[in-house]
Image (cartoon, rainbow, N blue to C red; front, top):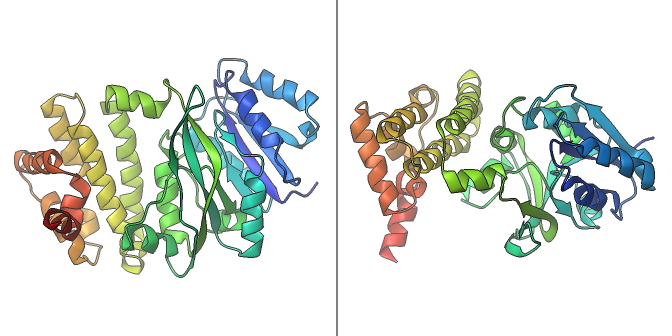
Length: 352
């Protein structure tokens, strides 16, 4: 059967949530959907729940389970979806979240009306008990130009959520540009979005809320907020940073699209700020920040825009104590990433 959309959902130890999430996907008003369940080999009965729903639901025949055989990580589940999808378009959702009944229809109709590399809709953050905590709503916009997303995100300093979900991707766009995740990484969204920044030449953002992001107390995001960054977590981010630096240095990416380096700088600064807020010993924090801000190799490849000269100067300070003290000072003042890489924005705020 030919499908217009493939909806992909990873499954790993979500037996308490998977039924609610999968039913929200199966009960879509849009008809032509292939449902890819990526079994990442958890230790609970999540897949048994999926198999029961397959037998009972009228659209069970449209569900296909991809068995990873062994646990491979969230990045690998996204890569499997890109490889296995048969639809013209691909949609990711997490197995503990819920989408509105008209989610796929809204995204698909917009895509067919105005074809782009991907369409993203708005979402709301929901507590485990079902209370709406906040809403992330786009203003409706379509952009078609070279490096459209990079110019929107960094050139205009506009908001863009990096999570892979709630976006309808043209599958040929992803495959043509080899856009994928770091297979074993638990921070798959960061590297995936970095590639989107560079390769996207057209996108549409919708103000319609189509996704409910359920925040669990035991989620990785919440645990990190509660306990702070660990050395292990920082090392996973450092791996992503290494991917980004290699990508910039091995091709003409930065020359063609200077804004892509702005994203690396902001990533370094945000991560540094997270370390400064952590409970790690000062010696460890200092060591990690030195690793993060070691981007001299990018500077040599990158035609420096004046907005980032301060950041490159800071990252070039060889004395670790001086660099750490300066970052600490800016962190204690206000919003480290803007204070360094966007000094004019900070000055405007001070004047106001």
